[in-house]
Image (cartoon, rainbow, N blue to C red; front, side):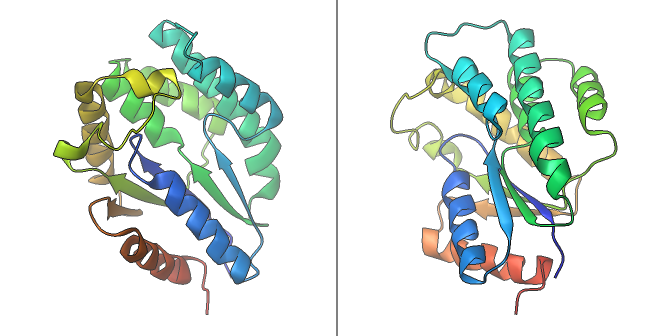
Length: 203
């Protein structure tokens, strides 16, 4: 068995969190040791930063926003991810590519700065595989049912830019599998489970 770091990416409302939890339940049934975490959030300190970042009362400048996100990532990396590497399967709801999709393609922050900060935190660390959840253009925003946090209030154009960013990133990498939200949840669960079987050698 190969313990890997597997990320679930996609814009809000794409189904990534649902499928991460479904994957976690699948690994439980197979009695495979794993941990799951989310960004922002995860470690105790990162969860505190999540509340700050996503609060409807918060109004951060976009550069401040970026630095808080990366502070949360640093806490996760050193307190959760790094100690469990090669010991357990690690499932992450959002990671580096979300930062590039949202902060660079969405907000227009210089990508080189984002890359430099990620290298400062993560060094040469790379995830093993990414499931990218795609929403049809006509359905973007429709799948966000409630406005629980300030990101839920962003307009359709912002999410279009972010999703296009994800697609550009996926086209340059081999360790990506696109999951389309217009498929049924059961069909997508089957696709993801089949990939998990080959990724971590589940029999």
